[in-house]
Image (cartoon, rainbow, N blue to C red):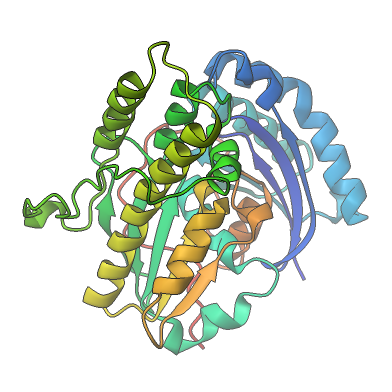
Length: 359
């Protein structure tokens, strides 16, 4: 049995978690900074770093207490070392280094992007990863920082087959909410308001889908673009309002129609890729995977005989459980990090994932 402590500070959530043997989440403590960043309309990296400094010790204590363990019971310390906001990453990484050194524990650096995919298998996903008929897995990683499609085979080899060429889907939702005066973070409030509106009332563009009658270039067949739909919303608001403010049914229908455009593109691209690459499973993960319309639409569109793994909402947003869980696969193969490990801001090329468990 292995107990791994995870630390996550890649953006604006400070989290610590204890996970047993890669799957059983014993605790997952998260401190949110939403109130601190809301006044700025988005995450301020330096402010996020300062807040992580304040929150790390309390969330660590909560995680250990909730799990009923102490640092003496921990077998390794895992920490997100990228991608993310550098000031925020460095706070968590150095904190984890200190814990590992002082308690003489192995340190494991974790790629935040891959951890999001692994989040879909926490609690009860071991059997899925062990089953040959689960592969290939197509993962839609969709958040404020990432909108990508990663194909994973039964040997753990991975290939990025689609990505956003401009804005991430979560960014498109957040910026739309800001434009409409709905506050920050935009994703949850857009999701809530959309349930009150008619998603068919307005027809916002679906970039790189061929819906406008223009053929999609082969190199963008599975890529995403959301800058155009944001621009369309800007002109939409200007056309319908003299003061740039929408309200009532007009606001509700606008939000519903805009969200539908974003979600529709995500689903179309994912399902098309799943069919072309004959994916046996589709994973949907990342913060935007909390979106109720996305979860419904992709479940309705899933191809026959294809399994759908939606990450639990509590593991969609940034959390340390996914970090600690993924780290177990490194630990059991003795693939630990050096204390000199550094942080990285941008997503590197991914060619392998560590968690494939074919028997």
